[in-house]
Image (cartoon, rainbow, N blue to C red; front, side, top):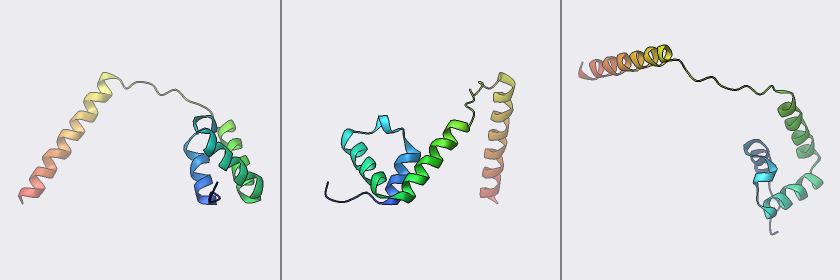
Amino acid sequence: MSNMMSCKEICAHQAGSQQADLGWRLRLELSFHLMMCGNCRMAAKQFRLMLSTTPRRQAEAPSEAQIKHWMIGVERALENSKEHKSN
């Protein structure tokens, strides 16, 4: 390991993916940094706590009526955009 990861990089890895998804070298660097940096250890602990207490919610598929409503809105926005550009 040539350079120790920065705190900013540690935060990005903690927020962006689960540690199991990382390669062995990156996991090792992350673990080493967390061993040396109390601030990042505390941030990682708080992040894990936040994830464990946030309820997981399954998104429902939109209904046909919702899709039609959204498409009408998109079409209107496109028409307004074209009219605005031509003026």
